[in-house]
Image (cartoon, rainbow over the protein chains, first blue to last red):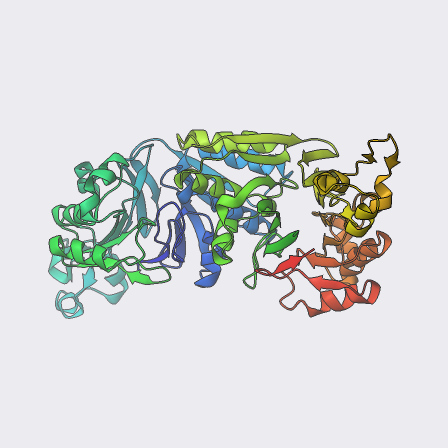
Length: 300
Length: 300
């Protein structure tokens, strides 16, 4: 099951007990941390996220509200004697910052921190059950979104049909993998006669910080769930563009054009104490929109 | 009035809703921030500390739990368009870290951040009404404590005496400054005949992270209030020494030997959920001990 838990849904300056950006994406027992604003480790404790389950961390860009909590989290992993490797995908200069902070503290991490610099759109992780890609957004500095795709499930066996064709049950698993069955007489039972398409893998895309930017659409097309920032309401579209951020209406338009199933919105400006207006404005364009609320897990 | 408000009283890994080290010292309308662990800016909001009143920040050493919240705070000062200069006193390498983090974010602070590297025991600030000094502690890496001393109050006028000697009231303010009065006939009225000693200025000392270390005593001698770390209870004295930290009994012994008036203890290890034992153990050696509790302001 693919799911995302929101740890921080605010933009740069913390306000109204909302925190800077961070999310945990889980699939199949593995957890991925996406961005890590200041206080992320405390939010993880608050919402009972098991730190030890985190195998990969993805940082979209090097504005502080997306990574200032990372060094504290790494430090705590160290003090808690983490053993497994940790994979960190982020814009290249982050490595220098981390190395410097460890050096001045005379601190050596007890686990292997594998740093993978992101410098272009590419496949970042390719495992048996899922793959993760990054794509460029349009922000003040180099910035990437991430898409998490479960792989297609195995084909579904039609047991009655398989028996009709006299296929032994020992061969059934191979059928779900798509193989044809060759009878002793040399004749072939085609796979599609005895199985049907497996369930499609789910896709979640985190669209990071960005102004309205249609080139991300191919990367999130038909996704089951996307998160898109909406720092401002529609009436501040000019300010949003100036600061390379989006409005609620723009986020919804991207969701609509990308024909996704559902939209989560977040990264709200500290100007706004109440958030209902964001949901209302976005739903006028794309009905299946929800506010990304801290502590809430959204199943994809 | 000199006072200190505790924002974080825990050691490195946040736990039990306790935060890493940070305190705000106030005197005469000015606020000084002492250490700035992750989440300090959120703690400031929680306890209604006015960020704009902070004129100086002092960082004791470059272990993350004492400064990881600083860059986020500086960032927020920038986003909130702070104008006044900010003075930052810290071990020298912190400048490189901050510069690098600002550079990768393409971020220029709108206010003047005056960085003052600390490399030795010295007078850091000398103003009309107070002075601030740093002193070395004994920790794994270079580490400094800070003492905040209000200057002695003006001498107190004895108005009856001054009248007896025929001193005009226009000269009274000069008497409180310690001047003698010269009569027209050339004879002198000695200042001490018509005034008495002003109130002694209060002193607060923050003793930073340290193992048991008597060389700090001269720097905190007779202070009105000191804060001393006690990461562990007495039965973990060996572990404390190994990690260059102190126990509750050791903190109390320093307070006793330095003949201070009152001791605050903090920097509790995340091992301990309850803190009463710390207070109990310290009070066995030094009765006037209190736990440094987050959100509480202690008048010096």
